[in-house]
Length: 129
Image (cartoon, rainbow, N blue to C red):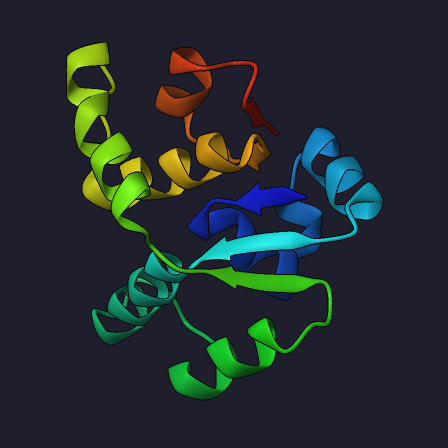
């Protein structure tokens, strides 16, 4: 299983050429692709605020993107919520959504496809691009 950061999910669905070679390779090999449900919120917020343009209404985009049989929507658990909060003491400087996505990948023992330099610098063994 491999997790996708929100931007990686958006690009995997809409513009796969934007993904890095490592991310593309990981996605090609992965039997399951995990999407944190917080990414649905992020994509909806970006769409509502006009920061991204989707090729269809946001509900339809998310529904279709999650319909891929390899994709698993991963819900936030209490364990992941606490792990995300505890990242402060470890020096992780990310927004709440980044914290939850990263904590979800770590809790699952999975790699995270992300272009986020802060995540890559914090944990280069988990992040890949």
